[in-house]
Image (cartoon, rainbow, N blue to C red; front, side):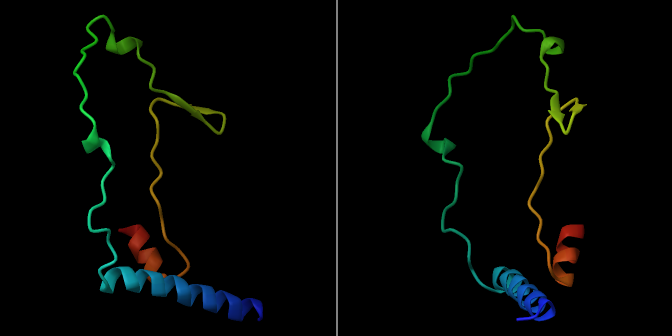
Length: 86
């Protein structure tokens, strides 16, 4: 298989994945975090000063003031670019 053929096959399969998710019911009947099984007792922390809490994180030798969340993306097809943009 040539590189071009392999790339075309990969792009085709990625497009298939997107279309399957758009056209078929592929969701779990009930998907949760599992936290509904637990009950948490509220315990306020009045002795803490909010300004003393450090939420910063170091990423690639750079300190950020708050943690970051990187969401999943798709790729490999023109349709994937449209999904990622939106």
